[in-house]
Image 1 (cartoon, helix red, strand yellow):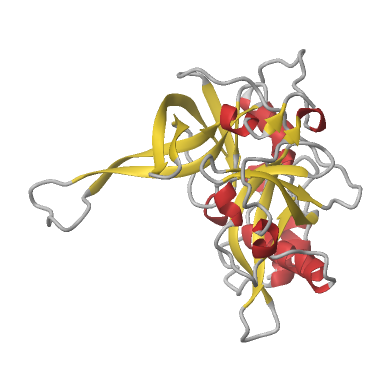
Image 2 (tube, one colour; image 1 turned 90 degrees about the vertical axis):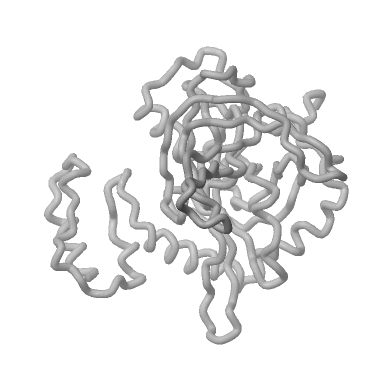
Length: 316
């Protein structure tokens, strides 16, 4: 299989279109883990290869004792929401930035979007396995990253957390800088060993009807772009203890694995973050009463930028 893909790639002329990259249908051999070493066109992703890349590279960091479990990372965040990140440490909006065409928006922003995932050992073999895969985004070039709070939860003692860039750079998550469980926002720190990330800046709140673009990793499909509009704001009851939080619904598609993905305006500024989905069901008279019915639509409920800014200290 590797040699087949290798021959296909070698046969591509420089500047060939994405449509010309086709693996023949006769290639029915099992996928091998070393396929990811082949060089692909910039916007062609081999999803299984990205997982293999993360497993190998982050696994080495875990073996070297440079990574932390999700339990260890969250143990000191009992004061969730009481810590804030200084605004001076975050990327700033470019006053001269212009609206971008969607292809240009993707090109400008995609390298700021990260895959965040855990590795664990099943106890039945010596291999590392990829656990849940979600999305995060760089907020400054020195390793401050933002994702959903729920992305950090529920993994257990044996799950180590790391991020990977589109270019395949892998970094361990070493600290939770600030978090708000109810708002579902977390600022985390990754150890880049001095390498620079490409950050996104926080923009202004979007009005209903404004364009919104999402770049995320739904269902383990990497760096997917979708586009829509802001459809409404609403109060969402988290729990009797936590009360209500403001959420923003959008029409751009996303799914499991998109959690933590940035919502971008046409200038590439962050106006929110993926949070959750809520399907709307309808049942006709012929369907059993114990079935939910047919899905009519799915609400895409997200974290508005004001909730992200709530964890930023604007005085520093």
